[in-house]
Image 1 (cartoon, helix red, strand yellow):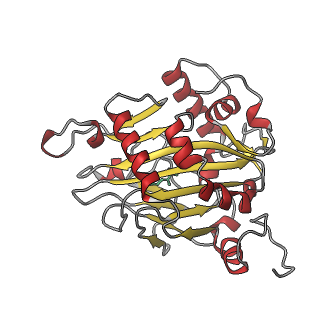
Image 2 (spheres, helix red, strand yellow):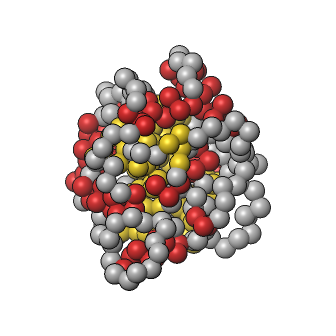
Image 3 (cartoon, protein in one colour):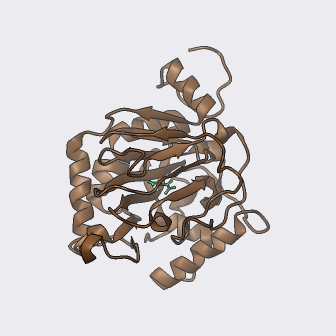
Amino acid sequence: MSNKNYKYTLNEGFTEEQRNFYEENGYIVFRKLIPEKDIDICHQRFLDVCSGKVHVPTVMKVKKLGPNGETRSEFTVNKIQEILYDEKFFDHYAAHPKIVEVIKMIIGPNVTAVHSMLINKPPDVHEEMSAHPMHQDLHYFPFRPANKIAASWTAMEDVTEKNGCLFVLPGSHKGPLFSHDYTESVKNKLYHGVFGFNDVPKVMFPMEKGDTIFFHPLLLHGSGPNFTQGFRKAISVHYADSKCDFINVIGTFQEGISKEIESVAEKNFKLKIHINTVWKMKSRLICGEQGVFQQIDSHL
Ligand SMILES: O=C(O)CCC(=O)C(=O)O
């Protein structure tokens, strides 16, 4: 390993080439990282959430029936969140040793999973409910430092440009956090985007089942609509160094989104709580020492 000053990665578990790639581009892809059997268990768990057999705190629906008036929830649920406290999702994804190994190379040994979701793009759903505009995940997070936060995102079936694969803007993790808001084309609750990047060339990421991308929270990314008759599912968790600190978002670009998240929490969970408490309640320690996210008694 060279003596280069690394800024975005911590430990020397990566090869030099992998580490340099993440430092330069703000992401790295591992093909077939998650075995099919783990993905199949998560897939079945998603269907069990859809059918009401299993409960997770947040189930978001597209307000439209599936093709031919299809009412089965797999056709109408577009996202489930806070899946971390479900032991199947925890064991077979969020705390999966293959994921945790890479995350520790990026953010270090004290790992808290702070955000967890399974994103479903059902067939035949209008663009405004199915695409995800270009955005930076840090927009949502009132904690820092940004370099101690990283996402994993795993394709649960083959994802292509036609069914809404991810796209990214390589190197954008080196820039600032931009202002975000609702865009013209996407109307889903909390799906904010940045402005002025429509004409910038993006890198599209077709992926196969089990392929996993890890990325920095300032990396500009999004995903297209699903134009096919099949599903497009992905599972994703954000991890932070447990020793991160909360920031005061008042007066920053993040004040508006923080208020919006507080009001969603109030509506969904009948809880009037501060944004920092919302994030603590969404989190779960994965390994290493506890920190700021664990200063709380309950979770969502
Ligand atoms: O899975 C997708 O379509 C995009 C997810 C994403 O970028 C996000 O939720 O931040």
